[in-house]
Amino acid sequence: MHSKIVTILKKLNLGIGFQEYDNFSNDEEYIIFFIENEYDANFSDNENKSIVYSIKIEYWYKSLKNINKYISIKDIFKKENFIFLNSSDFIENEYYCKELKFKYEEVV
Image 1 (cartoon, rainbow, N blue to C red):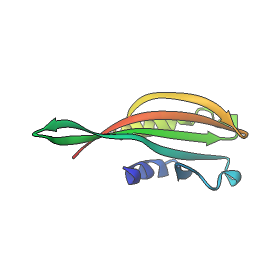
Image 2: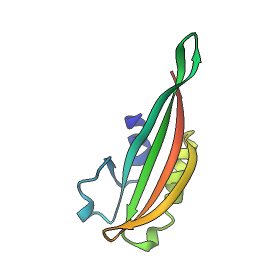
Image 3: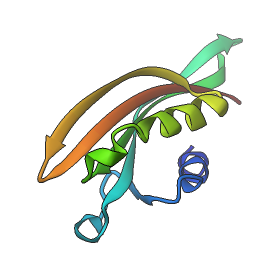
Image 4: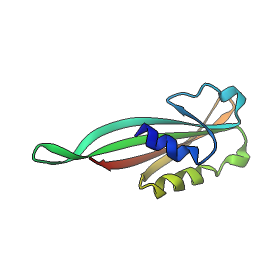
């Protein structure tokens, strides 16, 4: 799942971090992603037929001119069959953040 998420995020041409981002002091915008939950689902004969992932994407940006860029992130993930759940906004250390949550079910 990690490589799938990174492949999708690379389309945005932004810095990408998993759970943390080391170069934030040099970048005006970047993305950090997390896999918040993973569980087996759709059981048949005591075997799971799929895995469900709960994903969090944090889009960090300094300038309010980028306030709507999260829409591109949301659209890219929806095109890859991720289900958008919700989003929220906050600010920390002079950066704005849009947090987006998705669910994805992978057939095994």
